[in-house]
Length: 285
Image 1 (cartoon, rainbow, N blue to C red):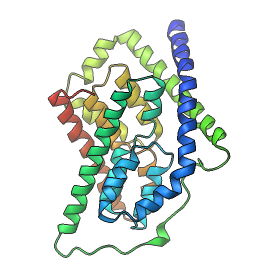
Image 2 (image 1 turned 90 degrees about the horizontal axis):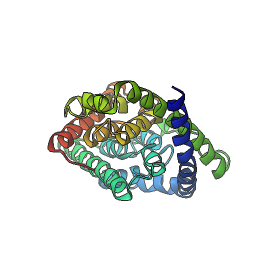
Image 3 (image 1 turned 180 degrees about the vertical axis):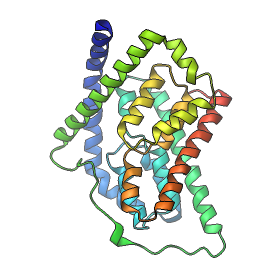
């Protein structure tokens, strides 16, 4: 037990500088571009899913929550919202960077999420526009909320970066400790065999984990993938259905509960379907 604890702490401390540098860069980019990004999204029209899918891969704090607010006001389309949710990487990117994963692998993961988000979003908007009697929804500005729910814009960039770093550092320590403990008692091969050798069960379970409206879900999924417990398809399934706190904010700002439930089910289904496809075909990242 003492060895497991010391190994976990040592591994975590090695990641700390990489996490801080990553968040410092991300905070700087967000403070400089967040308002401009939202303006672009508002004017995107039928190409919204394309922009949403591309911009969503940038792990800006509150970007998925901004999309929820914009959709509640009907400023962006249903497909654009889905594209953002599917492509949002949340805390996955900082974890991959801090673990010094091959940059090509990181780019592939981000590209897969963006492409799936764009294709799904465009397809959904096309279906909606093709419906008989389709009429564009009117703006509902009264539902918009500028509050980003993550307080990232408060204080200085350095302070925000440090806050994010410490939060995720604690998450990683806890998750790594549990993983090391489980691997120590059960064995890495036995744990991996439960999920990774089953092309259906892995994505089904991972996609459920991804729906948890918290950054912890993306940290868990990424760490499990790096530990070899999850395959690429299972990880992608969870990361596709996960949208950070964006889904939670949607339930708060969008009055149509049935629609919110449909969006949740859709995110889960897309994650499972593409996860199973990747697992079954043996596609590697």
